[in-house]
Image (tube, rainbow, N blue to C red; front, side, top):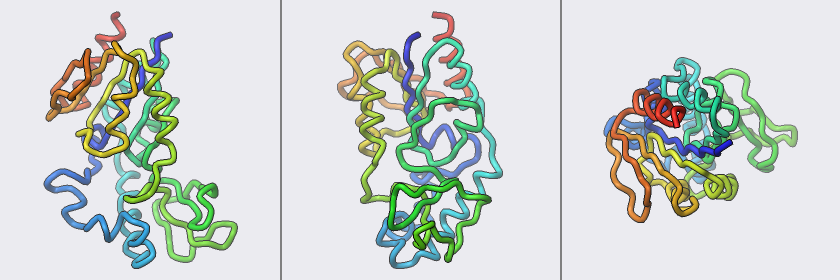
Length: 228
């Protein structure tokens, strides 16, 4: 069974109603990165950081997977599908995808501030000051903040190198190291890029650009691939 590796970004979740960070009306327009998405911000004003992610988490409980997420599940009928996502939501899992690797953390999980291996599922949407891990340390969002290492990147590189087909959905490919994954694929691997504002990728051969939203572009590609 051929292996398809899919790299997804904010664009696929935006169609479900999750606001992105980089668009003109995005979340960074309301908050400085330095104030809500760095460890220094957490040390300086943990209440603001907690509230920022609580609001993101609350919103996640109000949205559902869209046709793009659901089409990727259909792809599993004919292929070994592995999803690498830059998104911190769980919409891929909600849709039914079986193999999802989160590069930048998971919004519905929290972890210890003194032991990165102590990770917990958060019940409900609100993480409060005073919520502690088993070692007595304040719990923080299980998110990779700016300036922090991306612990799953090596696994993502390995998966990318194994791909027989590589699909990129809803990402500008401006955020590294995730943006570099497309350069780990084997020579000759077909690459599909689905995004309304997609541009050609320098140095990537066998590239097909589909300038459509995920909700239409992904189902169309899945249908095409399933007929091969």
